Length: 69
Image (cartoon, rainbow, N blue to C red; front, top):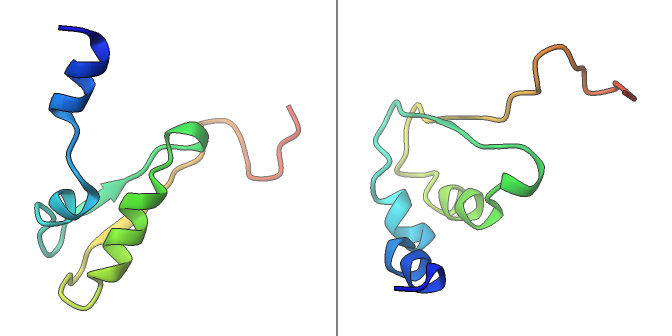
């Protein structure tokens, strides 16, 4: 099986992922290239039924949002 087929076999749609989210869950999304805009949009579309769900995107340790290094 090619890596492309393996990826396709494991991939699920954002709506399916949102169906796994429960009230009170904490969701941590990665930075930059790893950010998942389609998942964040799907979560937003279901915000009326999701209560107490926290979505966070932490900064790398030792860096600030204004760091130029």
